[in-house]
Image (cartoon, rainbow, N blue to C red):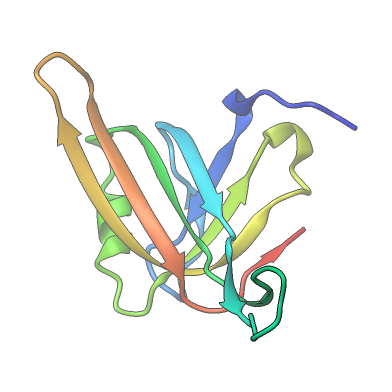
Length: 131
């Protein structure tokens, strides 16, 4: 089992559902939540609650420093047909990644005593996979 430092993570997104995904520079963090819905199947006489697993609710976030040389996150957020997202835990394991189509929301945050930061959240817009 290999171990990796998060400093080599990568995010690629397209600015439309049919566009080519490119690396998003200046990011410092990404998350991927692949939680599944659990449906309550508890019946009279059961000794505890029981569940069956349903659909994955794939969503996540990325954040980093605002880059005045590109508007790609905000262009992607305006896409009428979503975007393509590729999330790499490490560039040292480039053949391992998560991917799929998504809807994207972007924001910028300015703090008088901090950095100018950008962030985005996404939710699946179709089937996701992992390699």
